[in-house]
Amino acid sequence: MAAEPVLLRMAGAWKKWLVAHGMMCDFLAMNIELKEDVVSLTDFARNTRQHAEELAQGGRARILTQNGKAAAVVLSLEAFEKMAREAEEYRMDLRLRKAMESYAAGNPGTPAKKVISRIRKHAQQRRAQA
Image (cartoon, rainbow, N blue to C red; front, side, top):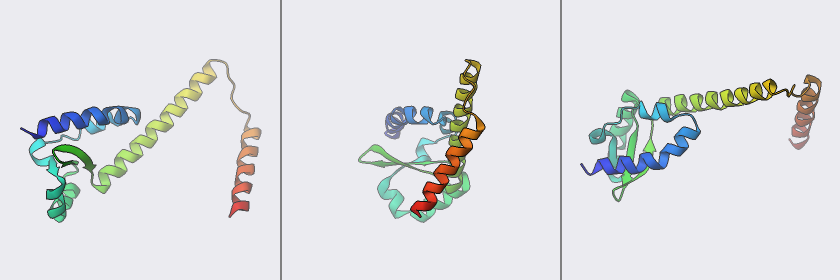
């Protein structure tokens, strides 16, 4: 019963970040079970191996609490990599949408020669620094 307010406070703090990075749906789909997934930092430290094995098998996140408040979220490596890939895809999708809207508004974009020239100049600068 005491774990429910922890999740609600955490969800409020994370909601803006998750929405901004396009991961709110994934976060909500993690099927967090309060009795199993909300764990004190002390318990996590004492039983790290057990928690790590469960994270790897189940793929669900652990919400770690400190002094009764949500302090951190721990994910399996697979879940983190999936979330990172999806976030990058979402960012690229936003860039593509912005470019398409700009083009539809009459902005033809930057000529390919100019872009290639910028890339070459940037590459030369990076090589000079190395």
